[in-house]
Image 1: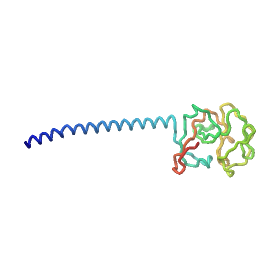
Image 2: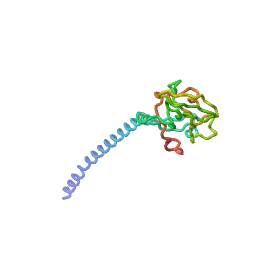
Image 3: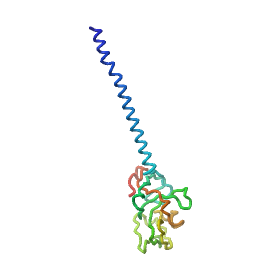
Image 4: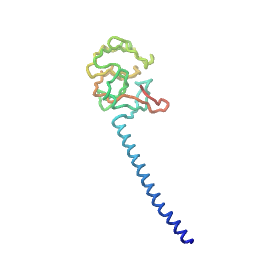
Length: 193
């Protein structure tokens, strides 16, 4: 009887082993499939929707500081227009190999001027609560009528910003994204809306 018990025990264990290894194979295959899909989705999001960028310089202080890392939405302006107050990323018009980040203050067709550091749009002073008084440069900028598809962009730290006051309005074709989210440092983590 002992040999029968041993044979029965072996026959009971023997089919279980291939089942376990087969199950592990399928689990690994599903895990690999999920990993590949996750990487593909991340690639699509980064390439077509969001792009991580690093802020360089102090022209957008205090909202954005040097070396902060943000996400820009590269797709949003296909569905909605660029609005005043948007923080946009664009190819520098005088050297399209460089990217700049600034805030939109003037829209196509508007009349924009700056008097003693204050921005006027169509004769009315623009309220800019995001700029501390210490960051205004108190200079003036001649009256400019923005052509269709051109935007006036300025840095928030007006004293240290190379912007439309120096090289003119930015054509729409150069604007490729809107800054939407800070992800580094973690102390600043959150939306830019």
